[in-house]
Length: 524
Image (cartoon, rainbow, N blue to C red):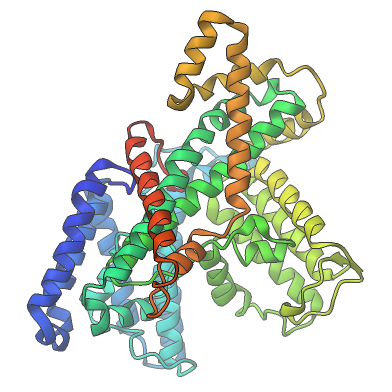
């Protein structure tokens, strides 16, 4: 099951929200005292199992078995540093083993065969949906449990009862695509009585976040994905203009697809009274590579900082060690995203950009960061343009099937020729919105139809750039649907008009569900 489907929006979500609050009202305070046997938690667990099980019952069983192993390893901690380290290592190895088999087996076998002339057989391995996200969630659970057992942190929920823990692992808004959330904060919200009462403001805010996310995904991301797939398939035939338009389309598609899905997840969770950590904060408005990664996939960055960068020494062991640690983090991030040398090159490029930023030679002055200003200070607008351009170029590695195609794409960017393939790729822009205009052009002036498609493509890119220049979904929801009292009364008429506009946007998104693509990050 996916968020952008009629069955989820019309059946699953209303039933989930209504059942969740009705059961909490039914059990009342008695359910609070017996958390492990709470009916609402069993209901949440069952609905999450149905949601994930619609993809594969086998992989649902695998996920539950994996979660049980990790829970037992965490329960066994507290017997001393040595035994606890062994249990932590065992749990991490289990997660890495699953990732290695399901995600990296063929990549590893191919490269071993190439290097050592072995004959390791390749297999057709079906990737479990969301494995990269829930594997990291289980690693963070074990790491937090280890720190609590060793006394370096105090968190009584580092080893919760099994039922709330399993709800954390299977929680359907985050199990497929994140955000990557720690177990303790999640369980605390489950135990908070104030969150068990229906709140109209939370429902309104959640619907707004879901609307924004759905619109980004199906109205912008999927439309741009039409030209992205065809464009990268024809890498070797592109000219510079077409290559630039296709690359910009993919840059916007990637953001709208992933951030849109995360917005929907945050909105669904908000309806249930649970706050997921924000994952995107307008990253394309960043003025430096480091700032971009403080705004893009924020929970993944937090995971690597907390469980990789700091244990490696962070910035405590000198500047050279710090820069090396940064590079390690980005190389791991590249590998996490996919099994291929292209992902490794993407991670390497991003790491080198952040290292360049850390050297402080050229950059934007940022008083809030607490760092010394760079030697050469540039205007923020120039910093935003440079950061965006470098990120866009790095996505050539991220999207290309292999290194040869990635290098070919770089070559095509410098190929000034008449855009013959521009019209071929633009034919994917036959959208319902321009159907009547296209039909009229085909009858009256057939040569104009191609230009109408190109115009539609450019207009869609312009709309995307305009949307990206505005506040992110979280900021919009904070302004329009505040959870604090005393703010909703301002300009009530204007507020209702804006919310009516978002209601129309939701209707447009739902009507567009018939031709949507799958979620890009399912493959990661």
